[in-house]
Length: 422
Image (cartoon, rainbow, N blue to C red; front, side, top):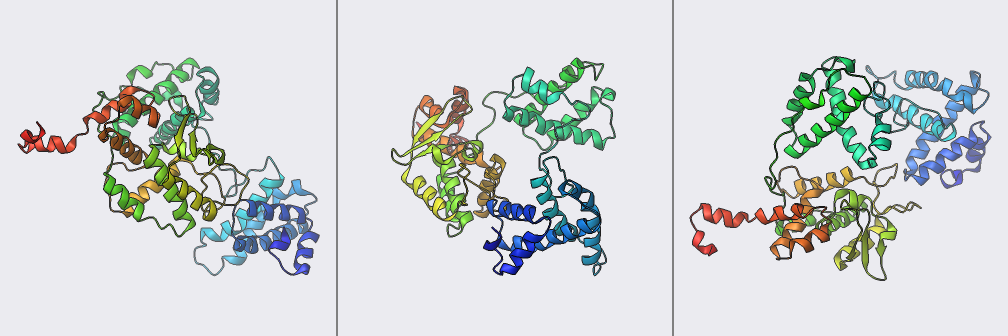
């Protein structure tokens, strides 16, 4: 692997002769597998060799000793390379910390660093005060991981709020505290999001009471906003706006090829962002021209005919945009480390192109294109049952709300042109 980046045999020999030569080569292999550019190898390998020399000089005997010397090495590195700055930039430290900690994480399973090279797993909310919460949700409530993540999103917001108001002990919670938190978040969240927040708080507070961590039954003090069925209109855009959005995608680049395929999947099949993120190479049957979407919200799989336009976009991405990897996911992040895209990243790309095309809509994201697909099917007079099955609605009521969206007709009535509707 080293020969791929270093042409001189002497350079390769010196690196392998280092007492941490094997970890360095494993790290270079890891960089290549995760799509890092060659310049990252050229910058990071010399730093790792210096770290090895430094550690050995100060007494390191084996790989297990290396974590002890990380901070001293970083301090020396910053002193040598940051002296010309009045205030040392963060990148000076990160330049050394990132490769050192990433390499140690590869060779020492229990190593946990402090910088970007450390494990990116976000800690569970209230992991110290309520360590059994995740087991309660997973084992006793039987929730899926997606549902647990949904609860944890809101509970992290609540945890941050408690830190802001200086409340460190859960036993000090009073009914007014979660109520004040809901009011605060309600200014920026939609009604449905506030409803989800309230649900997560109730689950959490009931758990705390059951475990004896609080003395009061606080869940009864949480009142979700009243939400009437069919009260909200789906946020869709016109088909002309869809064309405008697709036109601003630069399909000459790897990023553009990927995003163009994603946008077409969303608006053609009305897929959710998580469903696009979950697509794998095996979900495309090229011989039968079928696209399989598995484990949908309604609890079933859906097989779609593969549209020619969508198929061509995917082929274009596979040939000129998807990284060379053994991983079976279809869509990957462009920037290293190359990892499968997540639902929030899918939604962010939709928002980016809607803004780029000058299309203004409230709370843009992947669901905007899902709503647009459904509304187009409603306008084409397909039955609600057919539409619901097509987009994977878990309930008929999810489709029926689109019957309300006859905006142009409503506008004519408001302007007095009601006879045209007869």
